[in-house]
Image 1: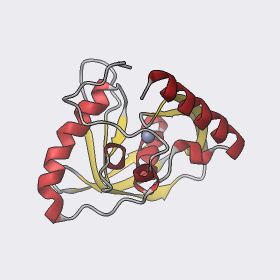
Image 2: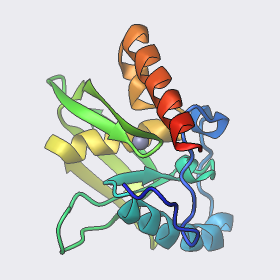
Image 3: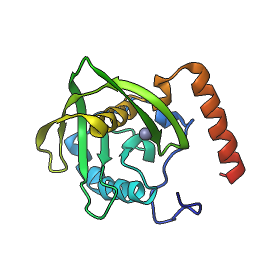
Image 4: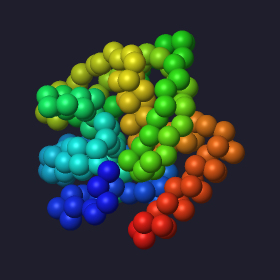
Amino acid sequence: MNDAPNPSLIPILIAPHPVLKRPARKVLSADADLVRELIPQMFAAMYDAPGIGLAAPQVGHSLRMAVIDLTRDDVRDPLVLINPEIIARSTDMATREEGCLSLPRQFADVTRPAKVKVRYEDAQGIKREIEADELLATCLQHEIDHLDGILFVDHISALKRNILMRKLAKEMRAKGT
Ligand SMILES: [Zn+2]
């Protein structure tokens, strides 16, 4: 995590922020120019953070789009999701520790369906489907949650959530941000 924000990067909103709690609207063909501009900006901010997923509301755009890249090494594997929706979920569940670029340095175990099938449009507007398990399944559900104004802390107990949000607020104050 870089301490000094890079001014050339689009800033990532930190919770609590009203845009993070707002359901995002569908991306329309009229949004094409904005989407083309946002995709590289979102990847740049995500790689810099560094993170493995970033949803448009996290950079202040209440639009149903997100980017994901699970590779942590040299070879990048960018995935652009426009208007993603979960069309199938497994009944078996999996618990994984999650974090979020909008809640820096905060982590909690979240239980979600172990496998999901997601329908989305890619950066070229082509309709696609992806079946995912393991980390990608978690990441897809986490990013699609962002588009509905849901954060990973909304899946944990109110007690744990309050502790974590207070810790985040204290850390952000200490950083002077
Ligand atoms: Zn997140």
